[in-house]
Image (cartoon, rainbow, N blue to C red):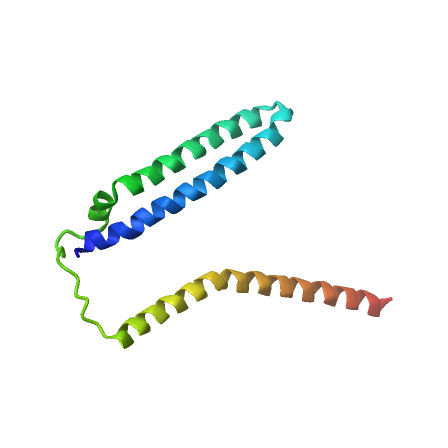
Length: 138
């Protein structure tokens, strides 16, 4: 299996996921437009145009990813290393690589939560210190 053929599989899966996301975006934009419609302002018209562009561009992008994954993968991979993949790895090497990728995934998903929780804790401690300082001075 060539690199471009291997890369075309996740590109096609990404296109399917984007189709799913497009359905969610269409529902969200519909509900937001129905809430903003009674305002009759120029902002509503601008928002409607942006919503129409968003709702139309997302499925087109997804369709391109599903319909032309080999073409897109050829654009993403270097042309000089077009060869077959070497799949002669042991089970321990495969497990090590999978656990490494899983660890990176878990870290990348939780770093934002760590920052958010730390900021919330610091804000709570700051407000508690202000409350204690006010009660001590009274």
